[in-house]
Image (cartoon, rainbow, N blue to C red; front, side):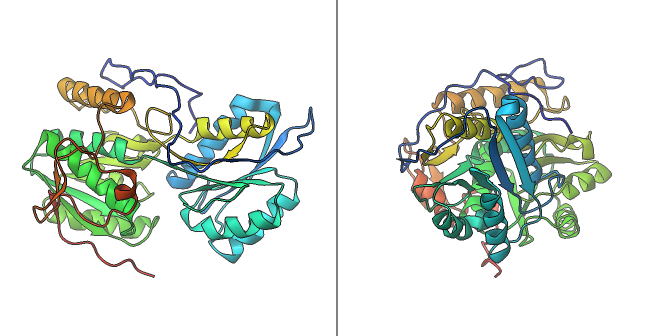
Length: 379
């Protein structure tokens, strides 16, 4: 799969529409910023290391990061030299790999898993002249920044589509781990769903893993057996899409464009786009302008998006989704605009208000429209 180059626009397949140009990157008001100046040798490429929790070709979370690495290489060419290590477990294994990358002269290291946070901080303290970016964490240091995408934006858009494509009014959602990020994603999807179809309900099956095609397929089958005719996921494999293709129903992909696994079933994917961020951070190191901050960016900053839409989606629905996407970019709409009730009918976000970042980052409740309860996380 070849990553498209640094784009301002993405064309919708079969729809004749184009996405609007993204607005400039906005600063994060919650960022904690500190500047670290490093001696960069002129005419030598910046060595950049990547630590992957999975395989670079898993077609999910890790593959999206690897596409971003490759896009950074294409953008900066001889200015950077990259190394990536795959299938790195959290804890001691991650520490060992990061120490090796730092010892090998990598001056910028991207730790691309949520569970690498403490390991990153520990190794960063040992290598104060190496810069680290850790994905999904919340603890920073003078030479450690954090970053994450606002995945709730594309998930809301896929929910809007699901509401118009379901006939049974039952949507199946495969959840990975019951943590705020995933609960937030399910909530955002359901918020979008209820905009286009207030009668539709979301049923969730938790698999307590990020990547296990067998478990994901079993979960998808369970959801189909209880009436779901649209499937979506917060997991990494394409198992649900493949099952949807077999069953003649619809599905959404996650992290990367998964249309190849079910051309008829696949409506679109909620995708991560790390290339611009990786390019910007590498350039900042080269230019001695790197800062330790917390980046949490969305569609407007080109960190998340939806993939081309299946032409099976009616034109009016495509236009509705594009319009809402533009509102996200312009900042005139938010996936968690009030009023929002939880599944017990309690108003959590009043009319005219928005669920703030802290509320999103600690989300432990289901919005109205989701059936079932949130389980405890498996150790």
